[in-house]
Image 1: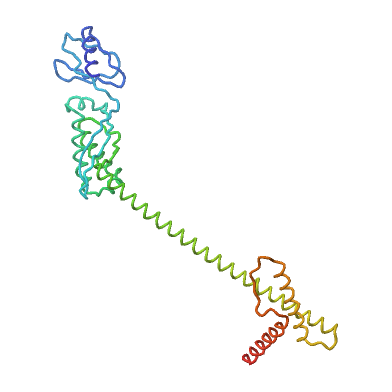
Image 2 (image 1 turned 180 degrees about the vertical axis):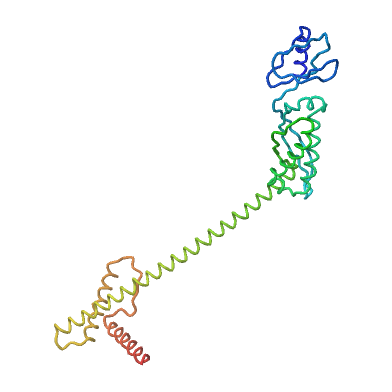
Length: 296
């Protein structure tokens, strides 16, 4: 683009005038010596007295991407990609035009110097975490160096830090192993919670079952007591022993009736004669009397 502007400038000089585009300045010389900076617009250049345009300088923001290979403190080689946005200062346009032959190579050299001085002091993880600090160090160094040549550093970005492919693969495997370990711990904790909840549920179930059995037996005892009292009041001369014998006989026959009505029953009572009820009752009474004597 600079060559194109110079071509049109020379055509304009043949007519004694020159046009400078927007966001661009031109370097005016007289007999090869710098005279002034031409702002955008139309300017008269009487070539007959030695005036000419040496070249054009764009004032727009430009960008250069720099790839710098270096190593970290833990000896991992990485490629750091830095994007530098810069532009010439209009008030120092002559310095920007005359003092530097190749602006991009100059910027690239400073970027290499700062990155290769900063990154080797960091480990790989810290380099990823401190990208902004690296970019700030590069920008500060470029700002001090390039301002003397009439350039302003608009923005400095560390776009990427790319380690070697084998290092990336190893890092991914380490992260995968760590996540698998966390997943295994979480799974074990979940199974532990399930076992605990299951045990708590079984304990609660057995507790409630025991309460149900206790209430059932209490109800049976209350019913038997009420039956004994009612029978003793309605039938004079009977004792509690007589009533219990009769209740046991009644329960015995009810049980035998249920067993006989079920063809698939596997319950067996030994002995099963009616006279055995008396023996069972005697055994129950004897057990109660022994328990009472032990308590005393």
